[in-house]
Image 1 (cartoon, rainbow, N blue to C red):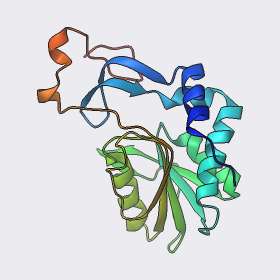
Image 2 (cartoon, rainbow, N blue to C red; image 1 turned 135 degrees about the vertical axis):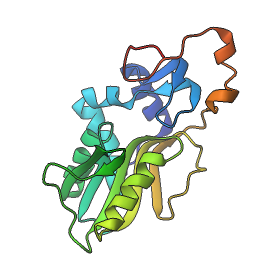
Image 3 (cartoon, helix red, strand yellow; image 1 turned 120 degrees about the vertical axis):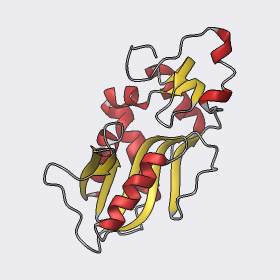
Length: 194
């Protein structure tokens, strides 16, 4: 079984600039002084493979038929994990405010599906993908993530594994103590200020 040690993962995060400090608006709408830009890992195929192999090994005995992740952050991860498992991969993307299958992607009824995501804070995107899979008749057998930044508090009701768990504080926008410091609020993934 391939399993990355915590120190190895943190070393990769440091080398690739994944771990960022500042004042960030998360996809969940919450604010945090720490952001994990996991997309930076996927610039490096060797690191991507190590991360994906770790997740794939956690689910290697679960008879997975399909791997799916929410666009855009989990597209490469989904591909790499599926490659390691030797199965098909697709991705879900937003359409009219909800996750949907586009581009001719389909989930066959009864398919055993693994949902992957780069980072989980509240699990909102993963919950939407799980709902989508089930609405298509697929069976969600697990959720695999690179980083669980909830410290293990998010439960999807299926087998869950992460490469690394990090308890990183986030705040509802109206309760954010960073807002009063004058540090500009930045939306990760873009250079635009809010």
